[in-house]
Image (cartoon, rainbow, N blue to C red; front, top):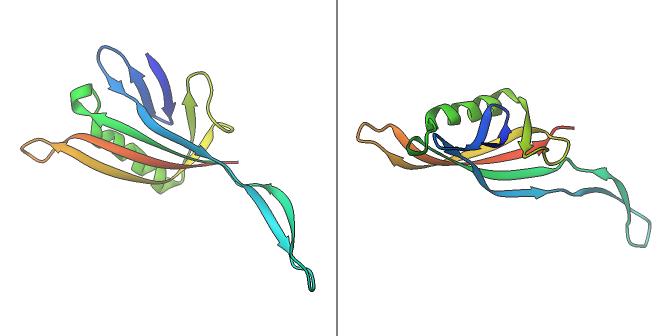
Amino acid sequence: MTIGSLGGIVFSVDDRRIQSFKNLKLSGSAKIANHDLHLTKAKPEFTGSEPDKATLTVQVSRLLGSDPAAEIAKIKTYTDSGAVVRLQLGNSGPGNGRWMITGYSVDCQDCDRRGNLITAEVTINLQEYV
């Protein structure tokens, strides 16, 4: 059963494969301009909203039916190309649903005796594409 996706990275749980995410964090902020006034405090003005940001962690494991190297390669390709991908969680996605991967980090947890990656946790940083 598919529970969501980030571009071509599919989050699913079924009898052949488990690949999901955890620690989803969403944040947003306002843009404030400060106008300096003579001999008094600056006057703040709301000028709009910054693009939302999100962070999530994906566990990829050969033991759970995923290919960690292939999934990491997809994430690297999206990051290096500046691709705009759709973040889908259930029937919808946070924000307008369109995001760019601004960075990622890989925590290699297990390797086989030949050095092939078995299990990794990938933390992905996203910014809403407006």
